Length: 422
Ligand SMILES: *Cc1c(COP(=O)(O)O)cnc(C)c1O
Image 1 (tube, rainbow, N blue to C red):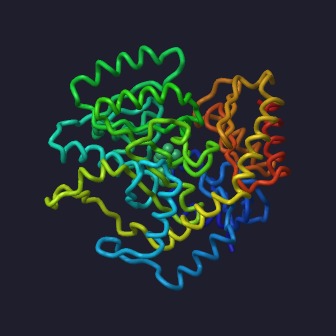
Image 2 (spheres, rainbow, N blue to C red):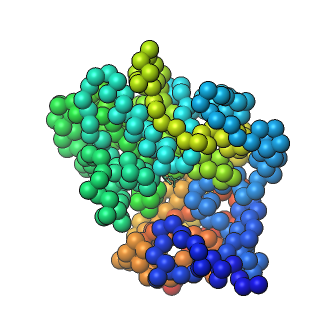
Image 3 (cartoon, helix red, strand yellow):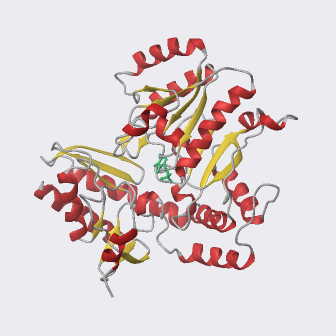
């Protein structure tokens, strides 16, 4: 039988890929805990948790057990007009850990739909109140997904050229720094006067796709407070940062001002099945609650609140709250700190940053986002049995919470070796 990686080439079209320059896909046959195994049996430590999803390890036995049991009872049912236990239980569990102003949960299928719905909620909120607010505010270099609304607000639309003419109206601000904050607030204050800004979408504290760029909570706090004063809905895109990665359950927990809307996905279902979630405050929900049918949110996906996805998410929330996972998170934070002390002054390291279990370093070299160096680094890591996906000259680590110290050392060693080859 021909290898999977060869059969793949006949009919498959992969995401974010120029197939002419990158024809080879590696076939992964199996995963367990923090390990991925290719079709030849070679193992790789999953240093980025398969895009920040499988934080409790691949094929986590507790999650598998819960979902297998649910599968025998109820697989799928329409969520308009019907409800079910997995969705109800999950809502109760999430309300217990979300920022305390969050009261209503709207399910969808992935991170892009979660932000798309957040944007639609913000626009219709004002529409329902008879206010003409048609502009969204977003950070430069933010990433919010690949559907049209999400693409529009993403500042980091590297290859979105063909679509830009069709985008919704968006204005951008830089992320806050101690140097720019006063000017930023002054500019915003005058911009807000005409009441045309409907909502502000932002990745709180860490911009994942921008190569784990971090900004400080203090500046963000001031921006959010100012926007709230002017009736702008704040939409925290926690698709990447949610569920413990920043050292707290949500990045928004580092701030005093709570967002009106929160977007979640990725680790929500622990990497088992896709699901998105948009949560909001009672005040947002109230603008849709009316005797007029048209004031409702007429958005819905066929698989909304799929019972298996809800079951996986509920099991994941339970795991997140265990002492074991919370201790693991604290351990990883300490290991990263020690590793940082060891390498931050290396001549090839320009700068490093860490928040919670997210660690990133910028190399002291110039390169393109998807340039040759990136490929060279990627191949180096895979050769060492470590799956990391450098972005431009940034190497970042976001490993599953269940990683052992030895496995984390394997990642650190591969990163140290990488510093010697660039
Ligand atoms: C990944 C991501 C998205 C998009 O999620 P998909 O499930 O890939 O559509 C949106 N926002 C942020 C912050 C993300 O990291």
